[in-house]
Image (cartoon, rainbow, N blue to C red; front, side):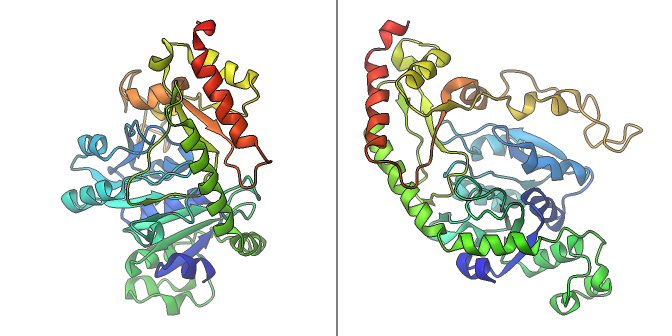
Length: 371
């Protein structure tokens, strides 16, 4: 009830972790065998593993080079008659282009399941993401101050304004929920009684208690991180070699799990290799790290496939995909060394932000000595 009141969503359910929140939401919107769900290539298996376990196929799309988030224009190119849903992922304090995605929902009749694991306080056009169609899914992993925005050790939350979708999530994974029959208005669901469909992905009460405590400081932590991000962005604007990510005009950013993202622009520094640039920043004392990782389309699970059900029944048996390096150039460039991560400070020590800005400027202005 506390999180429902905070977000303004009509319905909120707690589960045992964020990936199961997403999977229950995917079930609710009707994802099943033979379907496709579009997910960003710069993402995480915990976002889309539920697609596979429901018998459907994740289809990857590239990201917006200005944000590193799902690009609606590229996602549209991947939509087919089999597409059941879009699965945007809000990351590192930034909110996806929800207007663009909602237009795809309207145009093609696909559902939207948001991975809002990092985005509890985030908004779009002044409205919390939890109120947007169709379902928003949150994580409660970790502990303050480095966990998800509302950490409880482990847990998840689904939010929707759609009663039918909420009831489908109730019967899917809330075995023996007290009073569930009174929450169900659909006779086909109510006749299942308190057994539902038999899964029990209930959140642990201790995790919920920790989350309630964390909520008391959520807005304060978010406001401080936004203010510190603004200060860093202002100081880094125009510094050679740095590209500050952009926020969409209607985005109410926040969350900042995983740090603060900035982009390296090697073309501004004579093509200086990303590893050398990163090493130079670290030598100046900057607490920076790279996002070097595999794009999702190049991971072994996708490249080789896996016969989840045996007997070549899919949903992604070997030979399902023919993705190759170069298919998603923006994601590959960002994960190849152009995306950098700084701490998302709440209360930095005096002068720390200024020192970081000075160090970036020093490296940018003296890059020729590193070539």
